[in-house]
Length: 203
Image 1 (cartoon, rainbow, N blue to C red):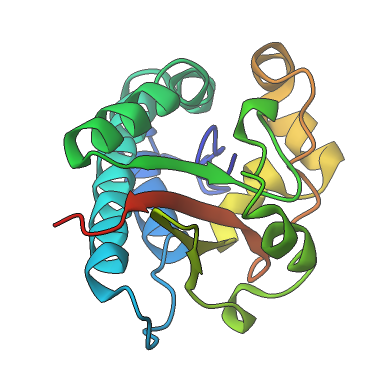
Image 2 (cartoon, rainbow, N blue to C red):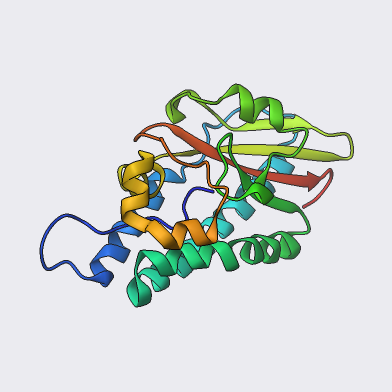
């Protein structure tokens, strides 16, 4: 999925990994924006879902910055492969909810949409992130929340034209994600969704 394994190598001389990590932080801050506020019959559950999404974003960003500073883009790919799911599970466990990321074009097949989210994920394929909003779904005993993930300018280093992605990340990406389909995105595209399932009545 998006956010992970981004190639933050800028095309200027004398820019090291620490500077690249700073660019990564800026790119992810743009890409991971909250959906537009909306009226919902489940304001408490929706707010809890968004708090968890923010925590996941912050924790993953911290790991990716460290990886970029210490090992460059290939290390960031490895963080996504080995740690992203664990981080999501830890945040979800602390909040007593379920939490993850998904897309219509997946990097990791394990991030396939939940059945309740599939219609939204598939139906939004190819749109611009600005056209989307937070979605809230009544799941009976739970509330499902979907928040859009946009594609920032720097995200296309890892999620843009396939030939460029292969050139930027090559063997590291192929080894980590042999079934990768998360390419051919452009800045402003809807890259995917963060999702959460929150028990009704949760505080």
